[in-house]
Length: 146
Image (cartoon, rainbow, N blue to C red; front, side, top):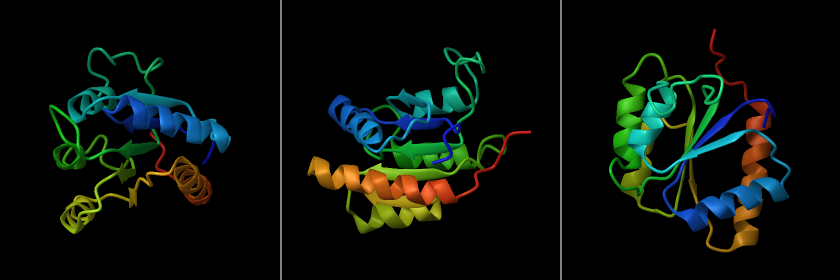
């Protein structure tokens, strides 16, 4: 990934969050990663609302990694809300979830995700998925806030 691009990770499971951070480290993904636990917090982060009002501390991400199954506001509801907001809808989002349900994939793509990754249960397979993810996003250009 382009190293300066911040990533917003929307993940409520502490173990999955730990695995994602470890896989990033193992693959030398050095982008700044900001983590929130549900869609409501993610919208506040993206809109620079309290407690994320300071754009210096909480910069607008260039990429969103999103789990679907979360409390308060799930991933699909978050996608609908953020894609409806003209200020933030161009930020690409990739779903990274344990759900292998066809309906979740279809709905995610209908809501404009850039990709859908089913999290492998084995850590080594997961780290390999992160390596491939990193290679792909290194080649991609993301919208720049101007």
